[in-house]
Structure formats: structure tokens, C-alpha cells
Length: 384
Ligand code: SOE
View 1: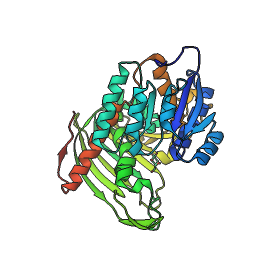
View 2: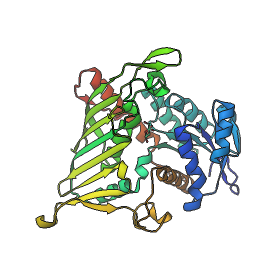
View 3: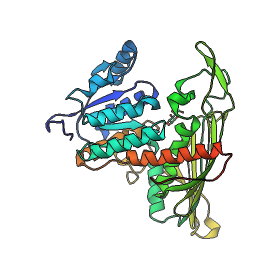
View 4: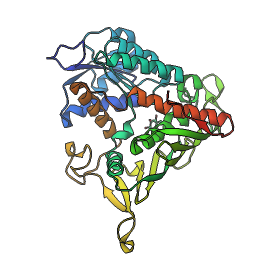
């Protein structure tokens, strides 16, 4: 419930942004109640800058209306939830205004473009929480069933004490040097490049899987293609194409993170390998339904990575979908995310990842940038 909501009507949802993420989130809003037992919602309004395009998207994605003025939408009493799918430079302004207006907020990752914006968002979220208004960051890979299972297995001690993690997130959509400029390649709109866009997922996963916090980092950033064709001629790229980092966690584990948007042949490959004292786990987003498990306590003659097909009703989120063996996909992670967000709202509990957790990822990203600027020196990640 929200402070605004009369208890007998569905929660009214507004989404801001209708591009890639707006489409993925809309799909999830549209199907969540068909599969999960969640409070009733209504897809009230989709907001975007171009009136014709947003009207078209709203009609296709199941929204009752479209609008171009997000501020006007925040004034509406029939809107209880605001889902921010707009680019990073808009996150702070919209989220802070929505929370002040008493709307629950889901915001796409990364939390914001700068530390100052992230801090301001956390302050707003903490104040809103005292009024029963909730907020969450969209690190959707927390809701991949195989990764949720990995977290459970680690917490149950199935691989012993985690010593080492290898994380990589490789894409190649920018490998072509004629690929045009976008908002994702300008520092003022995206904050950073591969670092904020995809290393943020890897860092969130590492901290989430290990239930631990990064304390120190080293980092290297690289821009392979420093200028690209824009609508009015060549433009400078002001963010990284690729990033490398080493992380030390409070509990003693170490991790490596390697991300790229120019890794030819790798389309959207998030890989995680977690090595513990008695076993290991391995995951690859390109095989989203699978988790590999190595049990170092089994007799040596039968040791080897086994493949867990994560489609059983006993596995996280899977009971709601299809009979065992009937695989699910990338889009389902967004449905799970909205399911968890709505459940938290209806039970009055704080959803996770909170803005505080999003801020912690920002601190790690910021420390990696500082390390890269200081030629890969060790940088401590502050906790406040
Ligand atoms: C683009 O590189 C992107 O869409 C990210 O922004 C998403 O968070 C990731 O899931 C896939 O790649």
C-alpha cells in the first residue's frame, strides 16, 4: 500500500522510458500477475519525450495512456509506483521527486551517474521509508533462478569458504568503430561506459552472492575507439569501452572483474565462477537455466563439474512457471524483480537491492575509476 492509496483499488503504475529497458519492464508489469500471487496493479501510464513514439509504445506494451511530462504524472493521485527506465542522468531528479510525492520507486541500474546524485537518492529513500514509501534498484540478475540458487548454496556452505571469484561481462555491440554515438557513450549522460553499465551487474552479483562487501580495489579503464560518428559529424567518446578490476572483500575473498563492449563474438556473456574451500560454482548467462557445481568432498574418482538444470519447482521462482525442464529466459528476471518489489510493498518491508545497496556498488565503481586515474593503484572503498 502507499500512503496515497485507498486500500480497495489496484496499485497504479507509471513507467518512465520506453526504449530497451522500458520495453523489458513493461513486459514484466504486463505478465507478473498471470504467474505470481501479487497485489493487483494497473499499467496506468508510460512516459517518454516523443509524444508519437511513446503513444505507440504505450499501446503495444499494455499501458492505458502515454504522457510526455513526468512531473505531471507524479502529481496524479492514482499513481502509486514509479518505474524509472530512463537513462542514468535522469535517475536522481525523477526518483527524488517521486519519493517526495509518496510514490514507491523502482529505478534501473546503476543507481545514478555520480556519487553526489547517489547520496542524495539514498537520503531521499531513507526519509521516504519513514513514511512507508519503498524504493529498489533494478539489478535484475539477482533474479536469475540459477544465480539465486548459487546464493542459497553458498549460504548453506555447499562450497565451503569462498576464496576467489572470477566475473566477466563481455559484449561486442561497440566493436565496430563506425557504430554511432549514443547517450551511453557520453560521460554526462551515462556516467561511465562498460564500467557503470555492466561491471555494476558483476560487482552487485559478487557482493550479493557472497553476502559480503568490497573494501579495496584496483582498476584499469580503456577506450579503444575514442571518437564515433554522430548526427552532426565525429564526436568524442568520453567513457570507457572496457574495464578491469581486482576486488578485495571484507571476509577475505578476492575477485576479478573484466568487462567489455568490444569483445567480438561475445554478445551478452555474464560469467561468474566462485571457488570455495570445498567446492565451486560456475554460471554463464548464455546458458541462463544452468548452474555448474563442483563438489570437492565427493570421491575423487567421480569428481567433476555437474550441470544443474535450474527448472525444478524447488528452485527459486520456478514453481510459478512451467513444468520441470521447460526453460525460461532473460525477460523472466524482470518479472521476478517486479514480483519481489510488489511483495515487499504489500508486506510493508524494504525491498532489496535498496538504494543503499545501489550506493555501495557506486562506491566500488567510483573507487575503480580513482584507481584507474592513478595508474592502477590500490584504492580503499569508503563505507560512508
Ligand atoms: C546494455 O549494454 C545492457 O542492456 C545493460 O544496460 C543491461 O543492464 C544488461 O542487462 C544488458 O546490456
